[in-house]
Structure formats: structure tokens, C-alpha cells
Image 1 (cartoon, helix red, strand yellow):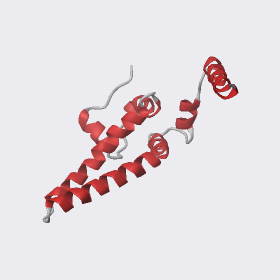
Image 2 (cartoon, rainbow, N blue to C red):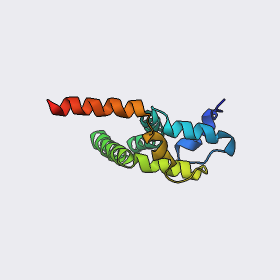
Image 3 (cartoon, one colour):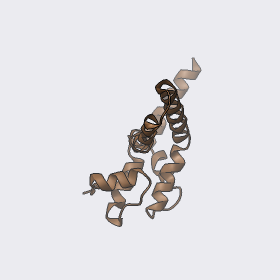
Image 4 (cartoon, rainbow, N blue to C red):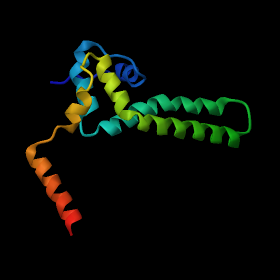
Length: 126
């Protein structure tokens, strides 16, 4: 059974920390399951929540909201731009070989590939 980290360890993991070796299977699952993009989004939200601290700065509130929104959406854009690289780096930090993340996600059965090929042919042939 895959051992999940405690909430405090997950927060450490979400901000870029390395989990103990006992959680290696969970890290691999976290970064390669079908919902890996949503999981990445959850980790990013933890890091981007610091943009809320901008609201405590002195100044006009409407300007602070715009500063926070601009910083938040810029950070979110770059996070999604480099999401695969960030997940790959997390796996390497936990002792997995480079390239494993992409290899696992791109694996598919012969049936899946045949179905996709037939869908592609049907769409573009007529």
C-alpha cells in the first residue's frame, strides 16, 4: 500500500521539500497519475497563496489587488509553462532517474494507440 504523507509533510513537499524515502512510491504516483495536472495545481496554489500578503502592504486597495492579481496570474502562467520540468525535477530529487516521468506518462497499450490512430484517420479522412 502506498503511504501518504501527513499534512505537514505534504506542505513541505508542496513548497519544494524532499520527503523521506518511505514516501517514494507516493511521490511517483503523485507525479505520474492521470490527475497529475490537478495535483500540480494544488501544490502551486500553496506556493502562490503568499501573494495574498501583498494586501497587507500600505497603499490604495485597488492598486494592491491589481498588483496581487498580476503577480498571481504571471506566476500561474510560468508554473503551467514549466509544469513537466518541475515534476521531473521533483522525481529526480526523490531519487528516480531523469526521464522517468515522461516515460511513464507516455506509456500506452497497443489497443489505445490503435484506437487513437483510427480516430485520427476517421477525423482527417473525410
